[in-house]
Structures are given as C-alpha cells and as structure tokens.
Length: 90
Image (cartoon, rainbow, N blue to C red):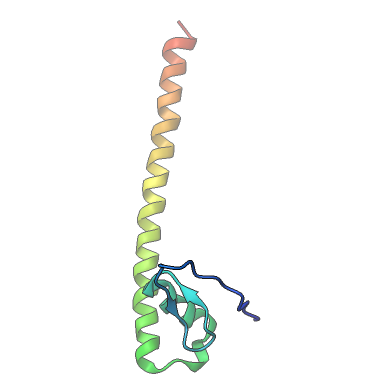
C-alpha cells in the first residue's frame, strides 16, 4: 500500500509523526492505530501490544456509539409514529 507523503500541518498545531513513514497525526491514538495497520510487520512487541490495547478501546467506543445511535433512531421513529397517530388520524 502506498502512503501519500504530501501532508501539511497548520502552524501552531502539534502533530505526532510516524517514525516509519513520516505521516503526521492529530493524536497519539491515531498514530498508534496507523502504525499497527500500516507498519505491523516492523513493530516491536511493545508497539504491537499498544496497538491491540488502543484498537480494543476504539472498538468499545464504536460499539457504544452505535448503540446510542440506534437508540436515537428508535426514539425518533416511534416519536414520529405517535405524532402521526395523534395528529394524522384525528
């Protein structure tokens, strides 16, 4: 996989730079995930462990987000259904 290297970091912004390809990232978590996904063959044991821990946390956050989004959609659906039943059928 080819990685583009023409990134621009705005002045005054801090960036975490990948030691393998030089790509900048806004947070250390993004850098850890990038290294694990793009440079998995080159990582040390500690970096691999850090990747798996970060990946696990990210997966848990996504699960919570999906559950919350589903709950909001269900509430909206039934909210509109009740409004239609009250207003539309009266």
